[in-house]
Amino acid sequence: MQRIIILNPKGGSGKTTVATNLAARFAAAGKHPVLMDLDPQGSSMRWLRKRPKEMPPIHGIAAFERSGAVTRSWQLRIPPESEVVIVDTPAALDAQRMPDITRGADAVLVPVMPSEIDIHTAAKCIADLLLIGKISRSQGRLGIIANRVRSNTLISQALMRFLKSLDIPLVATFRDTQHYVRSAQLGAGIHEMPSWQVRRDLEDWHELGAWLDSRKPASARSLNGAADRLQGLNGTLPVP
Image (cartoon, rainbow, N blue to C red; front, side):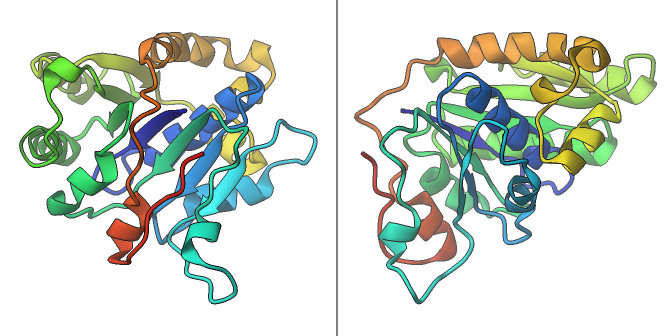
């Protein structure tokens, strides 16, 4: 089972957009994805509730919630047929929590927006992932996504120079387009929109898809109760 973490402590960086579109991409490929939402804002789960029933299914887990009706392990269970788990993490994530969130992940994706504040926050986030999260560059698990880029602007050019200086793979560059807004309103992924409308956007996803497909899932690893650890609870995330 492949485990993908979308992480950036900066709110509005595009974590949910990446997480939901990845889930839709894997669903279309028949991989029965799980979309786990650790963010108390619940944006991924709202998107999933909008999703039309005729579209390929995505199993949602609102990990930020507590239910007295079922056990925590039952609430966080992963269906046995699922081949990929995508975790949407919250904003303002404490760096000390990063090891618990990222442990056992096959890929950690950091979306970054083109603004001075986002660039500064991304630099600290990446430093925390390397130093506190103990993610080594040599592991090849860490990838950067340049999000909502307008190539003809100075700030987008500054973002690209910054990202290329990190010695970390820039695995995708997504342009600034209303197609993502529209697909989010429909509970769909960009891959599920009319191809003639989103042809340019689909091209942006090819590189990310190839990079993720090259990450070999390590079945011996587990998420080690990332949701519970984030919430300060006991228990572990069951893995089939």
